[in-house]
Amino acid sequence: MHARAAAGIAKLAQQAKASVWVVKGNEKADAASILDLLTLECVKGTTVSIMIDDPEDHRILYEIAAHIEAGFGE
Image 1 (cartoon, rainbow, N blue to C red):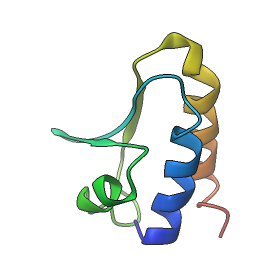
Image 2 (image 1 turned 120 degrees about the vertical axis):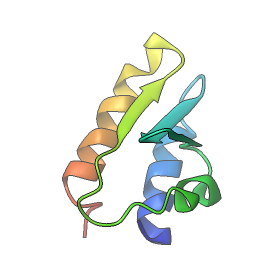
Image 3 (image 1 turned 135 degrees about the vertical axis):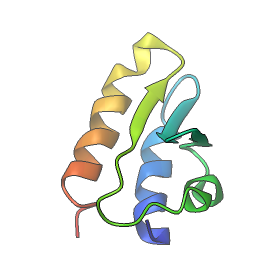
Image 4 (image 1 turned 45 degrees about the vertical axis):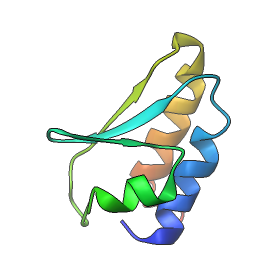
C-alpha cells in the first residue's frame, strides 16, 4: 500500500466514532493513521480485514472495504 492509498483509508477511518483497524495476519494497524497503515507493508494482492470497535461505525467499515476493492480509486 502506498501513501496515497493509506491516506484515503485514514480519511475515512477518522470519521468513525471509535477505532477502526486494518488487520493483516497477526498484525493490526490503526486505520486512522497513515504511518500505521504503511507499516503493514501490504503489497498488491494482500488480504486484509477491517475491524470496528463500535457497531455504529458499520458505514465506515463498508466505505473502507469498497475503497480497497475499487483499487483505491486509481
